[in-house]
Structures are given as C-alpha cells and as structure tokens.
Image 1 (cartoon, helix red, strand yellow):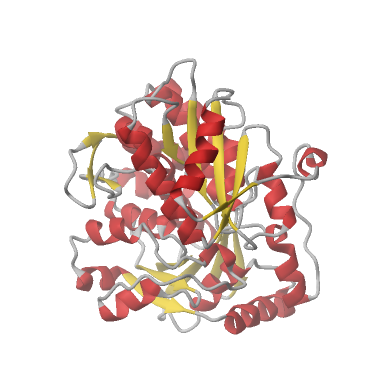
Image 2 (tube, one colour):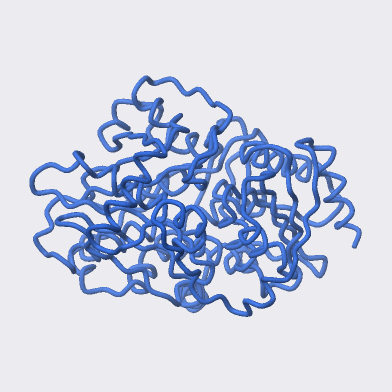
Length: 438
C-alpha cells in the first residue's frame, strides 16, 4: 500500500513508513493512493460471517501484502476478542454498540490493531518508542494506553484539556504504568496542535526515541475502523434480510470514524449514504452546507467526544473526493444538534425502551429522525459505554450507569497525577525531554 500526503507536498511512503511517522513532513495526513475493491463473493456471503471472519477479509485486503497470513490472523484474533452487537431500538432503527472492548469505546479496535501492527511493520531497537495522543473525553487516551500496555518498550504520552475530563476519566489512563498524563491549559484542539507539532519536531531530530501519533491521524489506527462498517452491514442483513438500503449515522468529532466509513464505501460497501452528526461544534456540517471550512474554538457540550473545532480528518475526506463537494454531498448528509436535542433523545429512548444511550450515540440516533426514506434502515453508531460518562447520563436520565467491569479496577482508582502545562510547545518539549532521558 502506497500513501500520499493530503497536502501533496511530501514524498509518497509505504504504510510502515506512514505508521512510524504518524503525519507527513508537510503537515498533511497520510491517505492510501488507492483502496482495494472487495470481491462480490464476499458481499454475497457476509451475512453468514462472524465479526472476525469479516475483519480478516477486510484486514487482508489492507495489510495482507505486509504480513504473513499467520501474523494477520494473530492480529485480528487478538484485536477483536469481543463482540460488537447490533441492537434494534425502534422500528427500522438500530444501534451498533462499538464499546465492548477492554476500554469500552470504539477506539479499542484501532488502538489494538495499531499496537500489534507497529512492531511487525516498523520494529525498533531496545530503546523502544513513544506514542503521543490527544484525547477530548479520555477514551482515546485509555484505549491507546491499554493497546500498548503489553509492549514494555513503548511509552504513551496522553494530552488532555484542563477541566475537560472528570477525575474518573483521567484516572482510567493516568494510573497506567506506561502512561505520562499531560493536562493542557486549553481545548482538545490545543492538545492536538501540540501533538502534531511535537511529531514534526521529532521527525527533524535524529536523537531520542521514535515518536508517533496514537490518534486517528495515524493510518495504522484509522484504517482498522473500516472493519466496523462492513460488520454493521453484515449484521443488518443477518438481523433483517429485507433491510433494504442502509443508512449509517456517525457521531463526528475529529472525523476519523466517518473517513473510515467513506473508505469502506470506496472499497465496495453498498451503504446508501452516511449522516454526519455534529453537536454545536458543527464545522463539518457547515462545510457540507456552504463549501467553506472555518475552524473555531471548540465549545464544551454534553457530548464531549464530539467537542472538536478543527477536525483534522476533514483533510482525508476532502482528498478522498478530490475536493468535489457535490460528490461528497451525494454520500454524506450533515446534521448538528444542540445539548437540549441530544438530552431529549437520551430521555425519549430511555423512557420508551429502558435503553441507555451515551450522548454521542444519542446524537447519532436522533439524527436518523427524518433522514430515512421508505425502505431504508438506519444504523446509529454508539462509540462509548454510557458508564464512561456516568455524570452526564445521571444528570440527564436520573440513573447512574455503572462502568462495565475493568480489569484490576483497584489499580485504576489510585489517586492519579498529571503533568500540568500551558498550551505551548516549549512546555510540552520539557515534559518529553524529561522522560526521554529516564
């Protein structure tokens, strides 16, 4: 697989090179030059295939030229040792629960794939490597840290916004032995900017441990999310063979998940279209409506994972469509919801079915209202267990969901500490250099 930079000013690279760097030297995101089309026989049989069987076919098409069949099977089996159920919630509307992995968020699959692919594709010496990841609600930080937990020579720097996470959310990653937690006096966009700048500085330096990104800007973490969409389609056919056209509603923050869905469509996935759901941080919905992209400072909402004012993966989406907004609009409908609408969706679903949705999943589910035509079936992606944001769910519904069982929960509950820095690169470099020398 050959990848190019979305800024088109850097040399093309292989996937191992892109994964090791995380971002192109010209500041662009790496995107495959072309994506493989999956065979017709796969779509004819996918309704009878398990999650791992679907994943193996998709992963083989993406990574099969780099890994032996044995290594690829090991990666798939190890990364997907849990179920991703599709639940009918109301009529022809379903929820795909992407949160049954070890850290209870959809980031688990990409993080675990990345943790297993990197040592195979881009091995490093005894000095090990560092991963830097920005997280808006804690799920990316925990998932990436957990994914690399058993890589003893890998250290994960987790950047999170000051006052953006609850104490419990911080504790989930900050107390892990392979993590350096960094509280940034700013927004998620500040955290992401600092992480990207650090990657560029690291690439220009010949000293120190290799540094790469753990966010979806890294193709090794982003590409495995393509699997979700083929599994969603297969599950819908299995649940209802006469489901008709499939519409997938995606809660959007940094747009990595939506970009994966659009890549899946390019690989032949026969979904009718996608609904891209923003909260009040609706820069992408506005781009679809007006053709102008205007990043803004992110506002804090009840759907914290969607609080992104400058989504980096928009570069991949624009590049994937050759900059043609009309073609993108044929595949994607943009919607935005405020806190009141998201909370109302949570209450309505809980009141009528007893089913508890996380705020992001509730936004995706509500966005299907009025979006489905006769004969269409809607699938809303729910990316985090409600217990990951128990405070918000309790305020909205009056019930407090429990976080599903966490291995060694007592260890996570220890009082955690974080390095506190202003949103400056010099401050981050001081933290990185201290730990580089330890």
